[in-house]
Length: 336
Ligand code: GUN
Image 1 (cartoon, rainbow, N blue to C red):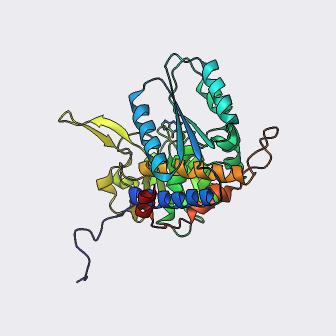
Image 2: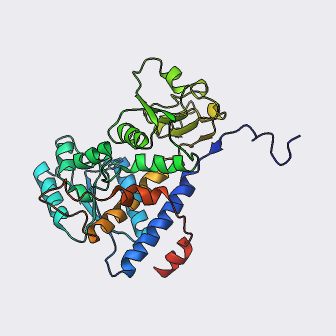
């Protein structure tokens, strides 16, 4: 008889608690803000630009701004009407690029269809691009030469760090090839010496490929795509997908890309919601503070040559990978 293990949970996968990891990262970020302010610098500033009235974007933006307030980041909200022209938006971005109290710029997407999203994202100064969407940051990530890492992939890496000690040689199957999740997560894992197979919903034999993986990152946006027999016993499964669906009773619910109940033979799995989601905002705050630190260290400022003086990746990713998990949230809230 096994003492101390409940027979109901003995064969269940470890649930990776994204909310708890996000909280610890936020506490660490708060401590970094404190250190900046103690050194006589202003609070980091994040400009959040929202064009139009997309209801989902409204919710995301509200959450981001609330979190900024909690952490000690000054948020500057720019709400523009849906009829805003591309020229007007680009003019705002140019102004924010030059504003010294703003260290990070986030332009919420999707943008209205008459605006060229790529042109707008490309106009954000790479050192203020806390989404990590600018081609300079994409290029830096691809070449392992620093830069700001997109928030969701960064959050995925931090969650993996909590359950994997050694990434070297691990076979990862990434399902999904998006620019903001699939491709960057593949780059981050390659950098950790994993063998990475990037797949998508049109990949032949997807189930068979997934079943050979030590790590599966499901980011296809396809509800419950990954079934029990897609997962090798002892694998780690990260569910990035989150889709709103209507169930048989007509109730709306959020569903991930993984059939959570069927993958309990995995070593560890993220729930959805409550896994990757909370990490995305925590990483946005983290990136903003790292951008502010890089700015004050003079590393991220050479407008004439954006390829020069790349912020050291260790500022962006390395410190986060070694989460210190200082616990002082309560104390901090009372002092504000
Ligand atoms: N829309 C949905 N998620 C995101 C995000 O992470 N960044 C931006 N800029 N827009 C989004």
